[in-house]
Image (cartoon, rainbow, N blue to C red; front, side):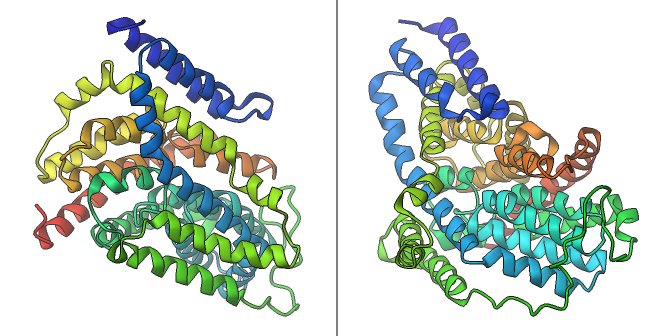
Length: 434
């Protein structure tokens, strides 16, 4: 059995291997390809005892189930025309004005991220926004960058907005509505900072009026955008199900129902409708739940437990404060942001929770979430969602430039972190929760 410093080295090495493979995904192999053997190895070597591994699986179970339901819900909403309708609305309401389109994209991305999670914004909304901007003859860059930035930074509002939030939700000890109430002001503050920086950073692109031609070299305009064809009807049934699901999340805590069952119910209603109409198959629903990615999350939790139990957890324990002063909240957010850009925000959350869970003030956990959600805009490796976003654009011959991405992140992340933490401090103070 491996223990002591050797256990730390082995656990860190396995975590690095898992993360590098997940980011590169050679030959398109799923993230679980390396994560599952790595998890089995840390248990076999005694770095994580079997009982602790089982506890990790039980703790992550509801979160992983919730993620599966949200993925299916977002996919069925897209199949029912939600994002096609949204893209048409963006094109029509913007009237070819780049600043107006940016405002609308900010609103659409922030709402999509909050309600359907950041993955929906990256995978489903980004192509729609790209097609809309190009079809209007506008530079797509400011608008698609808004998708990835808000996929990360606007994911602080609800427990369902990000897997990091789902993992930390129980550790806060808050209800769904309490979580949203405390994070509402930070959410608005961070979005406001992002918008102000975007207006400055992309000022030249945002001066470009609609030309009716392609907005990016080599990309033909989409004739569906701004055409004389009638606008698609809003998917009323889908919007109603999403609204009821969101309302269900809000009341679930009062009736003692876990949010995962509300998500399953919402996905079940849309699935039953699509199955009845033969628009989807049971196998297709299973595929959209991403079972191999869910397996990756389980395995990652076990590998991270090996890291926190042998070194990193003790180091962080000495660095993290216990009282929610402004300096303490900012310190936790900064540590979390740095850690997210070193090991990715998902394992960073698991590592931080290994230290913060068990009696920590909920404000510290919320500050940590601001760090792991806003911080990833600093680099490609900070969030798997950012890597997905980059692939979405690369498939459209519009891959972002690394230098530009890093510069925009350097301009937004520090100020957004400061604004978000300051807003959280005010929310906690006003609520008497400090």
